[in-house]
Image 1 (tube, rainbow, N blue to C red):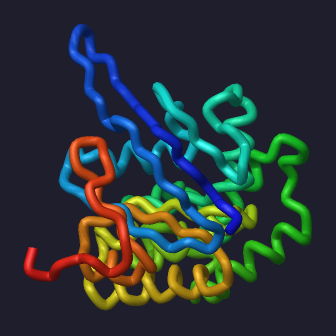
Image 2: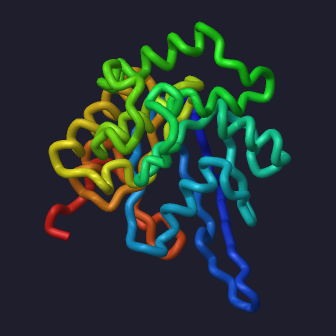
Length: 236
């Protein structure tokens, strides 16, 4: 079994004056290639901190984070930036689209941050157009975010996350701002991407969303409280 990502005794502390917030207190989790996992837990449980570390947005205080076998915690800022851009795709609850950009331009954004070449080639352009079509927005390329529904904006965010062909997609409450019908549409896209081999790691509060994943990790007080498959109780 090849691992897309691995956390080994991971710790993340935040120092606020004399106060120490122990957001992660020794977390060990394996994420095999092609995994589809939902991370759940109450506010302050550590789930968002775990996602930030997995996205190389935060460095561990202790322990190790391995991405495809590489120890991410030992890398400098330039290498971390490269990893974030090339190997990880991000989907956010608030979409994080650039309002003055069109759908096509928003999808292109990660391409501008490549260290080797920031130009958009004809091949890049074709890929962005193909991704827009993949998420059902092939006829909205010139629209700007204010002209789109919430679900359509999240589709743009998914296409943007895929543009550099990342190994892992990290989704932070990807359906949190959507109605139930649109939620199902977005989850269907993520399920299809996983069936094609993408590794998806998602934070969610929604039981209906978590059940779409192959397994769930429940966080509590900075530790993994439970881990398994379809163990969510609808009565809670």
